[in-house]
Image (tube, rainbow, N blue to C red):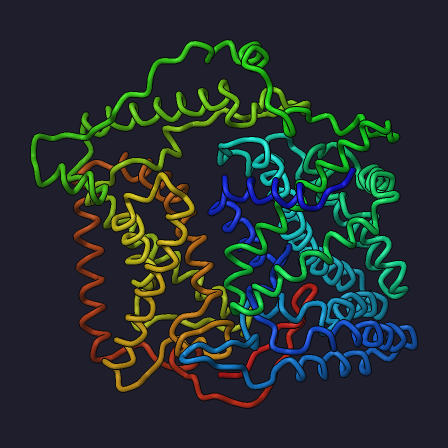
Length: 608
């Protein structure tokens, strides 16, 4: 018998086990627009009014387009856009709005109806095109936009649904679980399955009641595919309908019971949602799926036997695990690993900041010991039932060999390598900023106060994350939060200094972005820096180090000296002649509102 109290208790226990991991997963879901994006934007318009008016809004849109009046539909969307650009609420120095940025796209996605506009625009343009090349170009562009949304945003729902299911059963979750769909080679298949679900829901949307019913009918599709990604979209949808038969009202009441806890997010300006409500809801969803799945097996629902990942929901005995892991049945003990050069200063720098003078036999021995320890710990967690046994997965996983020597992040970095990585990060940051302006403004802009192809804030930020946060590398959640804080401090101070040193000139201004502090830093940028920092620490830096460490020391030092000399010369010259102009320091605010269709949404900007 269904018991909400028991289900919620189990959800809280799961959340307690993997709190920071779950928080990070939900934050990333919000950034991608997969789920919970509303808690990152702090919507300032009345949600009740939106819900009651959305049906009429979409009905008007569809009527306009059916009548061939594309202009009227666009005007209707623009009026919704204008309504969403009211003066943002400010508390202290923080601005709570959703005028610009990626999060603003997500915030106004459903509200403005811009997805419908983009879809009809594509269809009309294809029909009106007179040449095959233009038809192909339009279709290709549309497919590219929607493919990105489907392949990454929607499929991420399965990725973290799988993690939440795994986390409710096991104490430890291996990072490779995030790559489960890659290991089983099913990423494209599940993306098409989710697209079918999305398409069917959109077709039901105008009927209102039908949409609500089908929403609950298809409720379990992401979890079904997370357990068995070999199913087609049609199979997963039909199975979800059968499993949810007689449980829709029950599920509705479960969601209704979460309204009081959702108020916590509203009363805490979204902070409560990010740190508790969102991951708690997802834990409840995972528990609810496990409950319905158990009933489906007990009642022999048709095709329920395809939900056969038994050890995703129960811990196998040690004998069963040992039978499929004979190569790791007898494991040595984990040994303490230390790095020592008999030089107190360098030993301190290595231990505290992960910095060494140069690569030597001591570093090679240190990395081998760390690698062996990781293998032993992961193997023991599996044998002892603390982590999911991937070899017992009913879908054969391919290419699960972990080349730890390539991705080992618990390592030290030499001084010459750090200098070269500074310039690589600075150059990549410059490319990122230039690319944004190329896409948004169709204009090449040499971003930054310097004249060279580098943005020092990215290089310095990357090195500071590697060096100052060295002690947090074995705790990814703390690494993420520390990175967000560190990057926020660095970006704010840098913004203040540049403005102070150059007579009030601004090189960036986040006014209008969600949760910005004096226009110097914003939530969106910090979240991206946090995720970028994780990518740098756990992926980019180790791989770059593998490549750079192959360069002879004398050559690496020579390159470092040359780059530093050019960089210092640029610093001196730019101090008196800073890089300025349109798209760099030109932030004269205009009241003009521009709408640019982007995928499912309309990007809202104020020309500044």
